Image (tube, rainbow, N blue to C red):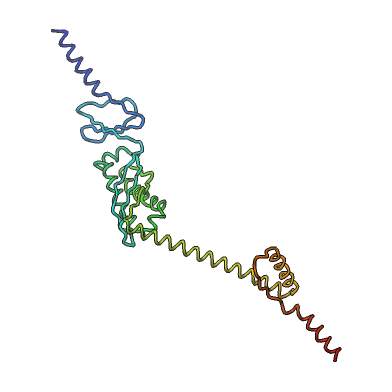
Amino acid sequence: MTTTMYIVPLFLILGLLVMSVRILREYERGVIFFLGRFQSTKGPGLIIVIPGLQQMVRVDLRVITLDVPSQDVISMDNVTVKVNAVLYFRVIDPERAIIQVEDFFNATSQLAQTTLRSVLGKHELDEILSERDKLNDDIQGILDKQTDSWGIKVTNVEIKHVDLNENMVRAIARQAEAERERRAKVIHAEGELQAAEKLVGAANIIATNPQALQLRYLQTMSDMSTDGKATVIFPFPVEMLEGFRHLVSGGKGKDA
């Protein structure tokens, strides 16, 4: 009987001690409440929590990956698109993350959805498609500022997909094709301009040196002599006949 009186309390004390022991990993912290009031933040390692008097809430300090569901966004130019994103954040202040907000994970998710729609709605479709890095930084800055009071740090936001309906895809394809045609015409016009400038330069050289034109004629005739299959009408410069005209005029004068 006497032994039983000692064994029962001993087992109760051992059971209470076992229930009081908590082990927190390196990336975990425990927010301790004493009779409902915040007491301290403990961890990592071995800690003691008195059952009935103290309560502990575990908080993970690792980076959390949050998939933001697809949101219907109306851009500034009245185009409806579906956009989804991924959000990376972590808890930097366990006390505020537990006390200031009921469920920081769900609260961050809801805030990310509304912020995504709000930010993208201020931009046109072309900007949404081509300036994702800037939009990512804008969304990340807004979220980080609003979640700071919750003890949460938003480290990165990435827009994953921008889904368009078939009509808009075809319209973008036509726009891209028109842009390519415009660039081709511009390049062709620039080539024509450069060729014209070269021709003007060559004409100026020939105008100051008539012998250059004759040499060019001779070179052209030499090139055509290698191909006997084509009939070529070759203009003969009148200037080369001036010598013959003077000879003919001189000969007639002597006869007279």
